[in-house]
Image 1 (tube, rainbow, N blue to C red):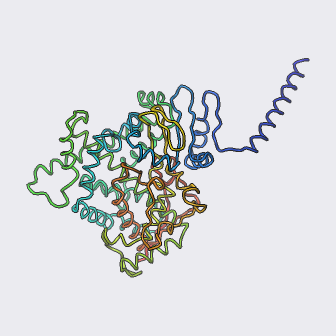
Image 2 (tube, rainbow, N blue to C red):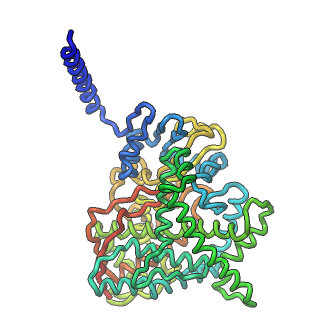
Image 3 (cartoon, rainbow, N blue to C red):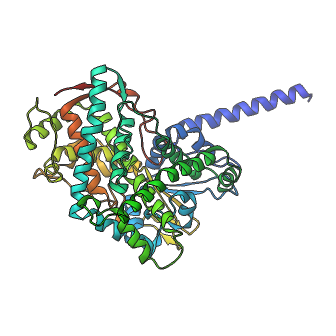
Length: 508
């Protein structure tokens, strides 16, 4: 048999084999990634990175809520994905002590230092106790209301009025990020960066937050040796992360120093100055170990953690809320009617002020915000590594080498949890038969995490979201320019890709 005949025979065998494989594949089509030699399942992740949340949802729902991802050989990138509510409840509550943040989390999120999101055990408990004592203080509630309404009247409304008058499109996500940044900075550090100015000034720290989150996600899908090399060479996303840290430090350290100097020279403390700073200085002094570094470094870590918690999460939820209203005008109509009825404001009357207690009357609005967070949780996933070997309720075995990813986004799209209408935006699912808020267990609705690590700022977030949402809905019509082209970013914080472009029409 000559060379040509051998080649033709090989080609025929190849075509026949490929045809059989293709037919079988089409009949048993699966969302699961192909397990290639050496690279294993990583190519599927890279190929779907632009639609990461959707792809993760397809795979996990097909496999019953749990999937063991195989990373490239010798890279220690194998990951265990689970959104099984029984597993979530077990990991976050029942066996909480076996699933701390751990050293692996601290390595990936090293920019958080010794802040509340990056520590475990006694230090975490002290952080939590200190923060809870502040947020439950009556003076803090007064400060919160005063700060929010001050920034609404001096920052948010003037911008919306200006764009309404000019008829120009506006990136609502950018505006909401500026609002939450100004408010959280004012609350924590008594400093107003005034990013909500009419000219919408360039914000280096806003870009820094985005670069940092992008780099942290990149660390999850990149071999540790590779991102460590990038860090050492100061290239790629690691270079951007380092630059972001420098921007954070240049912003936070002067704010801390200025506030410390101010408090040192005051003989009396006003109500609004009971403040975070003194509480965390006291906490630092309580912690006897010297593993916290200097006081300034500890305060920087603490405030950076709280700023990350209070800035992008709330603005992301509000952005998705208005994106969903654009597709559900009847929901918006019901919210507007509830505002008029419960806050006793006429349709043509400017809504100027209402309190935290009055916001509790906005039941349907609360339900709409919960429904937004069900479909688009601000924190899309959680990362855990067990301390000891364990067997999960699903029967899967895990070890101290198991990197666990818990995707909250997927849980909001599971028919087994939310019914066949799980992809629909229905605030009514959060209203009880008596007309109050229907509470769902956190292992079913983990938008604010679950178990002992449930978000301390949950109530504050709802107050902030209700005040902003009610003010905008009553006073303006928000028209999303292309509602059909609104997609989530593949990021730890679930933001709208390329922003939410809207037109603003003033009503009153």
